[in-house]
Length: 122
Picture 1 (cartoon, helix red, strand yellow):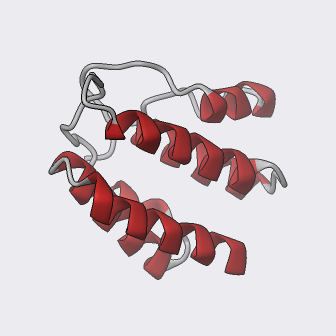
Picture 2 (cartoon, rainbow, N blue to C red):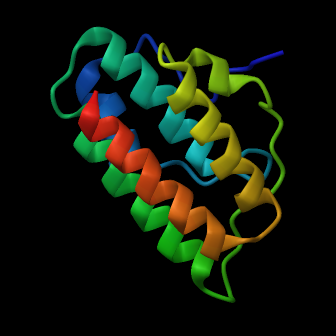
């Protein structure tokens, strides 16, 4: 069952802020917060959603590459990839999260680049 990490009824300004600085949690991937916010902003038609989402993911990915990071690696929202209107985008997201949970940031970076290219093509 998908549980939302944030209040998706919040104003757009607050959701954009969450993309720039995802909340620190011990029980959820911060990337999941970004994903859910991105899907909501995209649904609202916000033109800044894609750029802020990719930027937020890159920042989180760099943090995961550091040995001293304390970001969670447990994914309680295994079905959130289905939120995407584009099934290929959803599958890329699912693959990316699986690699993060396995602490495989190198292959995850490749998926992230493909994910970004797919977003830019949409």
